[in-house]
Amino acid sequence: MPAPVSQPPLQLYSIVIPARDEQDSLPGTIQGIHAALVQAGVPHEIVVVDDGSRDCTWAVLQDLKHTIPSLAPVQNPGPHGFGRAVVYGLNRMKGDACAIMMADASDSPDDAVKYWHLLNQGYDCAFGSRFVKGGEVVDYPWVKLKVNRLANFLVRIGFNIRLNDTTNAFKAYRRTVIDGCRPFLAPHFNLTVEIPLKAIVRGYSFALMPISWRNRKYGEAKLKIKEMGSRYFFICAYVWLEKYFSRGDYRKR
Image (cartoon, rainbow, N blue to C red; front, side, top):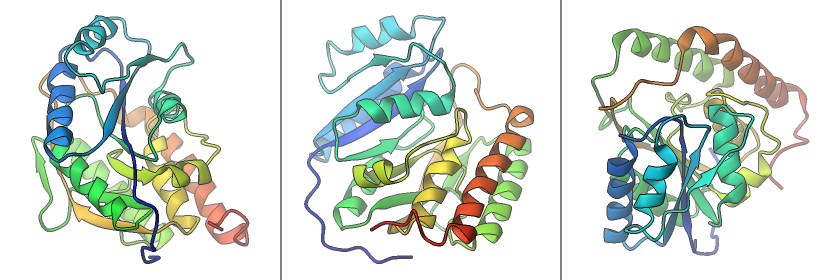
């Protein structure tokens, strides 16, 4: 793992949140993130991407703008998909650092603040794990938990990395990492492994820390395990080939 180096202080933290049919979850999610960042004195924007919602998600976001000035909602006109929505937000963020968070309040705003501090220590990436000492999961569906641990074990062995929670979307990056990992191929939840694996393979520095996760209170999860297996495999195979056969052509310069 490359060590952090001296880098210019970060100026703006962009929180990128993909959202599809999340009218009930978004108020609490955005208010919690905003409150934590304001209390910590973190300059920020909250970029929420409405990814083709059929409920009142967009109206809720417009209403929240009146009380949360850092909220910057955008609409993805399509094509839709979790990965496409995240990339749409990354393409429109103004910050020199970002964190990808979920709309359902499963990710801790306090952990997002800790990510910001790690990036400011000079790291290129801040990765959290729910499955190390100090980490926490609350009300995780047991079937998904078993699949999650197996998938992350295979990724860790295949790439020979310390990170044991690669599949979790909640991670933070300097803008230079996002730009250095393009183009992104994953249109769906497999983007959650494409970005961190590319960052590691391409030589960007990262710090690890424990994080917490809580199951959603409203709505239903968008990740469908049966639909994603082959997509995760494709992205992992793609980045694995880069790691072992690209001869370093894409590494950080």
